[in-house]
Amino acid sequence: MLFFSFYKTLIDEEVIVELKNDMSIRGTLKSVDQFLNIKLDDISVLDEIKYPHLSSVKNVFIRGSVVRYVHLPAAVVDTTLLEDASRKEAASQAAKAGGR
Amino acid sequence: MADVTTADQLDDSVVSEPLDLVRLSLSERVFVKLKGDREIRGTLHGYDSHCNLVLSEVEETVYVMDDDSDVLKTIKKQSEMLFVRGDAVVLISPPQRT
Amino acid sequence: MSSAASPGSPSPEAPSNNPSAFLSQITGAKVSVKLNSGVEYRGDLQCVDGYMNIALEQTEEYVEGELKNKYGDVFVRGNNVLYIGVE
Image 1 (cartoon, one colour):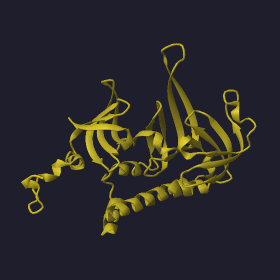
Image 2: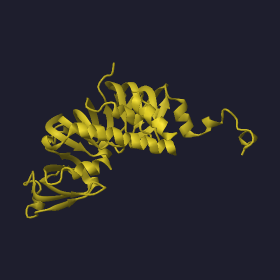
Image 3: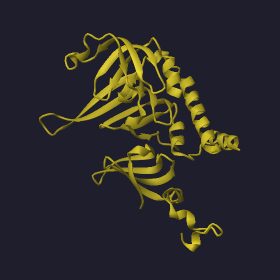
Image 4: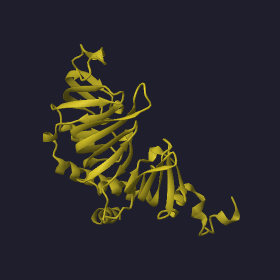
């Protein structure tokens, strides 16, 4: 759930989503769900010549599983907060495992 | 009972499960090998049990066979902040610990 | 069911009869981990979890039998693992 919460803090930021088929889409992050499916607004495809399919499309829903990377603006990421949240998530998972 | 083990695992820096190695690498430079002949070096800021990662000051290296020749080409790309989806991760190597 | 495994008399060596017990027994041993890609890692096994995620120490990476890299510590994501063998 950590990255679901993380993504919610990035809503309305401009990101570049790189897909597993090598296509990259720039757009404004509009929503995200628990599978890390992503909705982008005002999109543009980075290599328009190679991928002309979406030239008339304004917004997309991207299935989480086809994402390879998401390039984020460094300024909006609180790295200390994210590190602490990662440790907390690890601890809560360990607690679950211990209770089993 | 469960709380005691949790506290123990958090307090010391002993690797009692494989993901501890990743936890101990938070805010350190790491090397990540990915599927599709890709490698990444960056500072680790976030991870979860799927190996989803967030890294900063990232250098990605992609190895590709040149189309007509059999020469292995390397392509380098930079990114200031990168989310990596866990299913592509093969290996994570923290910096050398002393 | 053999008589040794009867409920009344749990034999001390019984745990070695299942794969995950084997894995916990070989922690600390020198192992070779083969991935689906064919790449092989040799090192000291620190630990394994239920996903077969693996932590290795003093690791050497072999591609097509040739030493390609050395790492102090390595985390290997379990889904890539073909087998773990004791050296």
